[in-house]
Length: 258
Image 1 (cartoon, one colour):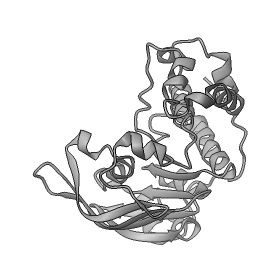
Image 2 (cartoon, helix red, strand yellow; image 1 turned 30 degrees about the vertical axis):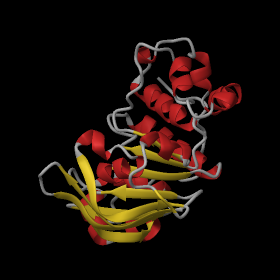
Image 3 (cartoon, one colour; image 1 turned 90 degrees about the vertical axis):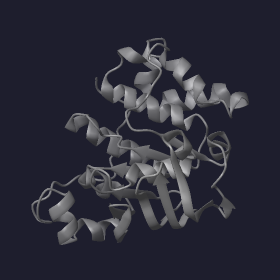
Image 4 (tube, helix red, strand yellow; image 1 turned 180 degrees about the vertical axis):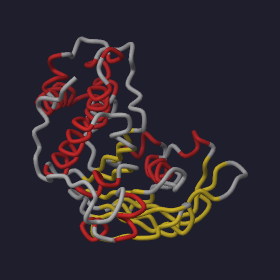
């Protein structure tokens, strides 16, 4: 279990980005964090993955634990070894490297298991097997997102942090991302997904948190949040009756389109 207790985060000498945050994320569950720009969503993932310092951020109060072990102050590499991997916004694949070289780069903590990990990645995402020797920069945006997720899985994580995985993708690709998230949960991996596309995130999540200006304004079962009139009005594009719906549970991810 990942637990965040009364956390406050500040960037530089500016205002506090997150304050009084309390949150939990369980194994084999999907936890969605939704909200508008500047709500503090990405800050939560940076906090969990240990990269706040690289963005001039620091935790000034509270504590973060994973399975009872303190996470604050640990290096990103140590956090990966604790079973948490972060797939950042914008994909950030190594464009000049091949698909397989990108995957190998994600397995620095699992070198002895590399052949098995590559086999697992290619079985989960067959299109990557087909393009394993292609430069990652030549992949479509959706395929690059798939590669970024596959690279994160090369560390055999227990929790995957996904930051805006549907950003800039066509509706078909958004459906594919939702299916991947459902598939990860089915395989026993806990997923924390940050999204402005609240309809997609809450359609696949078990629990959800709504952030505004660094504070949690609502939390609970994702199905309840989807039916909340305020959430529908602010984040789902209208009333609960008018919002788009998604069919949850389909995991046909083997034919990711270009």
